[in-house]
Amino acid sequence: MKWPQAAAKHRASIADSLATVTPVFVSSTRGMPDPKVLRRALYAWAFRVAVSPEGKLITDSNGEPMTRAEANSPPEHLASTLAWLAKHSLKVSEAAQPIHMRRAVTALSLKLNGEPATENTVKRKVMVLSNAMRYAIETGVITRHPLLGIDWTPREPDDEVDFRYVLGPRLARTLIQAVHDQGPRGKHLTAFFGCIYYAATRPGEAAALKDTDCVLPPESQPEEWWRVAPGGEPARGRS
Image 1 (cartoon, helix red, strand yellow):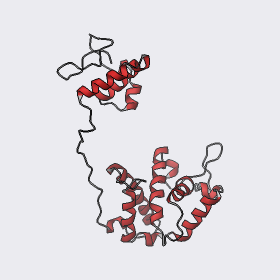
Image 2 (image 1 turned 120 degrees about the vertical axis):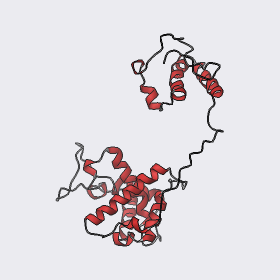
Image 3 (image 1 turned 180 degrees about the vertical axis):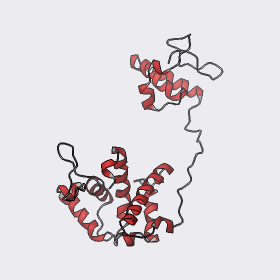
Image 4 (image 1 turned 135 degrees about the vertical axis):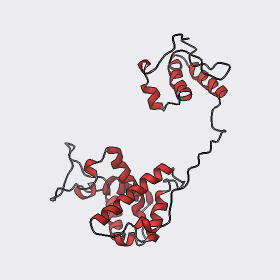
């Protein structure tokens, strides 16, 4: 329903979230395929629409977008994985029970390696599940939002800074100097890393930065702009 209007990044987010949570909504784990194979079958085939060579969505007789699994033939091992899921998947009304919803949000709270995901990632993935349940209500499959039936909140983020991994001014100067000493390419990258450290830019922002984006001081020190003055402040100069 959302795919035609969704941006590419949003589509990937939907597919990622559904591929993570779908294996939770099964009636049995007996004979369950390998998790990596499950994810590939879901992410790349079940939750990705089919596109023609011209880049247009392939639709069914009702004009609805078709998945790759519906429009094409997946490799045999992925086809058997999707068949296993089709056989063992819970009905939405069953999946909406609190015990399954709790398992679902738990799965969405973890990375692929089992470590806790970041707060924003968890919220984004749970929102996809929530939207799917809202669509189930809209289509009359269920009557009440199942996430309202469980007491769950995202894990509080750990905002504490571990200073063992944060550069101080002195170490930053040393590292940027080491970059500078790597020849012409190092001199070029000095500005890149200097902007990241002193201006707190993202790498992409530093790479796209132009002199017209900056308000430059009247005085400049061409090879010394990035150095830090004894008081800890960056020396004035070119950006």
